Amino acid sequence: MKPRVLFAGLFHETHTFVDGATAWSDFEVTYGDAIFKKLGDASPTDGFLTAAAELDFEVIPTLDARVNPSGVVEDEAFDEFWRAFVERAATALSEGVDAIYLVLHGAMVTQSLTDPEGVLLERIRALPGGATIPIFGVFDLHANLTAKMCRLANGLVAYRENPHTDAHESAMRAARLLDRALREKITPRMAWCRVPLMWAPPGTGTASDPMHALNLFARAAEAESSSIWVCNIAPGFSFADTPDTGLSLSVIYTGETAEAHAVLKRGADLAWSLREKGVIAYPPVDEVVAALPRDTVGPVLLVEPADNIGGGAPGDCTSVLRALLKYETPNALVCLNDPAAVATLTDLKPGEPKTLAIGGRGSRLDPGPVEIDATFVSRSDGNFELEDKHSHLASMHGLHIAMGPCAVVRCKGTTILLTSKKTPPFDLGQYRSQGLEPKNFSVIGVKAAVAHRRGYDPITKASHYVDTPGPCTNNLASLPWKHLSRPVYPLDDIAEPQFTFL
Image 1 (spheres, rainbow, N blue to C red):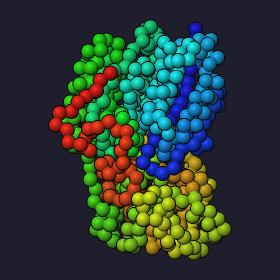
Image 2 (image 1 turned 90 degrees about the vertical axis):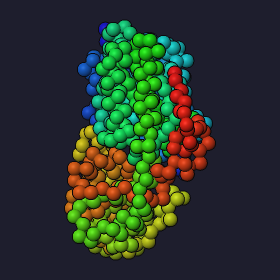
Image 3 (image 1 turned 180 degrees about the vertical axis):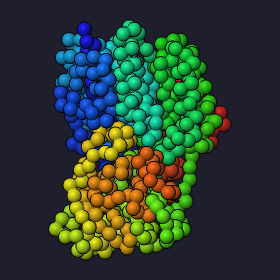
Image 4 (image 1 turned 45 degrees about the vertical axis):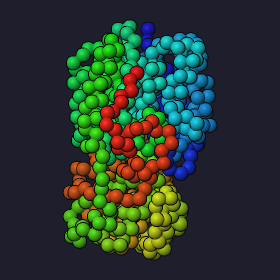
């Protein structure tokens, strides 16, 4: 008899320091059997569905809800998700299912909940038939994983790579662990440790320390003990103000809790010893752009973590554009999210001039819109398909990406792609779909932290991280924390770190 597995997805990375709230209408929601159409779209949901077909699961789909990183989620949105889940899950649970599988992000925050994923698991456990059922799933490396999540779940598996090239693979890995638990009639548990430190996203790339060393530790821990099924390293999302924001380590295990805690303690000690490697400072953008040679052979990247769209920033901050225009940098390329500007270009023909005020509306930290005398180049519907199925963007939306109506303009040697929906710059198909070949530009502004690297590194001659005003600042101490458990490095001086265990 096929194992019956109930499926649901709830995916949002919440930046609690940006303006505006995230409503249910902002989510891309797929209900019931329509979820099966995600098979082949390279998302974590596809990863589960692919593994489920291989493992001969009978999948009972409820809903899959996801949205780009943005501001605090409205309570009503979380409640609507829960109502829709119960409506589709109650009958299956009463009839009996063998397990539940969840695709989560792990860094969601609502207006009244700092741990909605933990509350979701708590509510599932309270449903008739939900108390003892195995719960497995996959979560983002940038999750602020909590003790409640780990206490209530049996097998949550984190992505291992940043950029998230392995989101699909990690979802499959979690499904295979679920299959192992069902076949061997073993119910694993989770142990957890919070380390009092956090790193801004640029410090969490897995190609270098501290994350590289921590990943090596995790794989060694799995190899050393048959009772440690998985060791997760989650550096957390440092722009979500919660008690648990920051680095967590967790294991899925079947042995003694003391053994699991010993593994976590070794990992925590290693993380603490590497804490300074995750704190990075960058030069001001004006200083970098002023020093670029006029005959730059590119592409040379100007990476702007403070307006990191993948971290919840608005994608319309203007500092990089201002610097390029100020120094009349030749053959430059940038992208700003500005639906209002796109709308004003609806009737123009290629080559026609237009005075525009663009960007600078999404963050109070930005100087404001930039007025330019632009030449209209082209427009499109903004739809494109990822060139790379392992793109970080696939972990968020699958293969098919909608930027909304788009327009391309030029001003003083800089080509500007204007979008109507903020779109993380993680795949070169974004520009190529607009007739722009990134390899042909000398300088490209990129609103990202780490996740752009898989797409851009193969074509990039040099890369400069630049300091600009924006909500995804690397200066974490400048943010108005209210809920964060203190002390925490690098905000506070800590002589002897205290690790918290589950």
